Amino acid sequence: MHPDMKMAPIGYISKTHGVKGEIVLQLHKEVAAFFKPKADTLFIGDANENIPYFINKYSHHQAKVILELRDINTLEKGQSLKGKKVYLPEAWLSKFIQQSISLSQLEGYALVEKNIGFNTTVVGTIEYPNNPLIVASLQGKEILIPYNKNIVQSIDHEKKIISLSLPEGYLDIYLTSSHTKDDGD
Image (cartoon, rainbow, N blue to C red):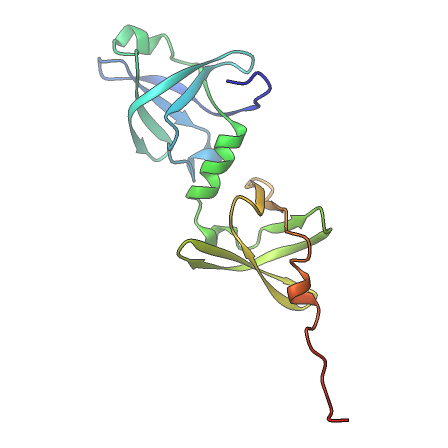
């Protein structure tokens, strides 16, 4: 793990499960609503020192995840992790959240594009296979914004803000007329 990688806490080890070293990860409530373990590695420890653990198997039960970790195969080894915090790199967590959240849950979120300098709100979503879209309104016009990692830079679910990075000229498609009305003169 790169030393400059920022880690985000996702929960803590609350107890062991069974006698073969399985442990229970209690997720923070803001993570539990949308988190699906898609990583094969978790980091356990504290904010200064985290040890990577590889996931052999897991089962997800609301805000709890029962984990079977590689090399944690006895009750004693599982108990040694009890009470410790669990982290994921912020970049990983952001990716998992974006992949697992339903687009319809984004309605009402603020959209902020810092390069172009606009703020608006998500008024709807369209879930096309392989091309989901965010629907927004800007200057009285409907705008369709692709929901992908190149454009959606981050989502703050607590503040309900989506940060975007749109390609230069993207909004021109919607905000400028490509033709003028001809009266026949």
